Image (cartoon, rainbow, N blue to C red; front, side, top):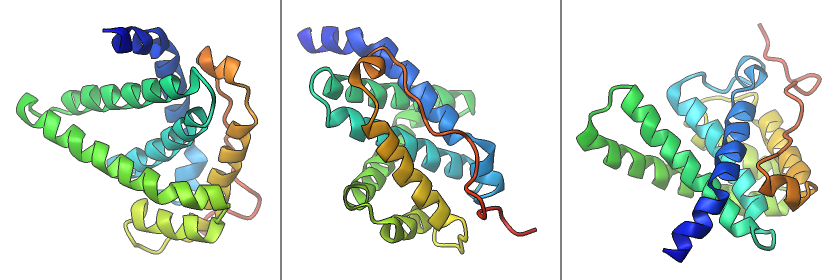
Length: 183
């Protein structure tokens, strides 16, 4: 009961932070200029990246950081449940599909974590090719990796107090010069 009370206290901030991560992950340039597949899977992968960055920042913070990280995670998978239902997935299979998404999220976050910690843009680009582009040629992967590392650094500089209030600032939604996809 006490755990659920603590979670409830951060629920609103968790949903606000998650909504900001979703908005950042839906920036049109990520799809148009960097070539992220504009598919259900491609969008899930980018939402996962942005949510993982936020969770990484919050987990590293003192209290209430870890509780906020859990609230962001809870908001993400509550949203996934609702989204699947809106897409017409039957009630009996929603739980299984959400679990599959949960496992994918954790696998990707675990793969990205050491690369983020090391600032390894090349390794991160390779992981993004595997996960976001499913191994297909991805000329935008190096730019996306640099973007993710920059987002991680920007999040690390943000104070915990605004985050605890559900306020986060992601980088401006523009592409790096020279990263536009060839026509």
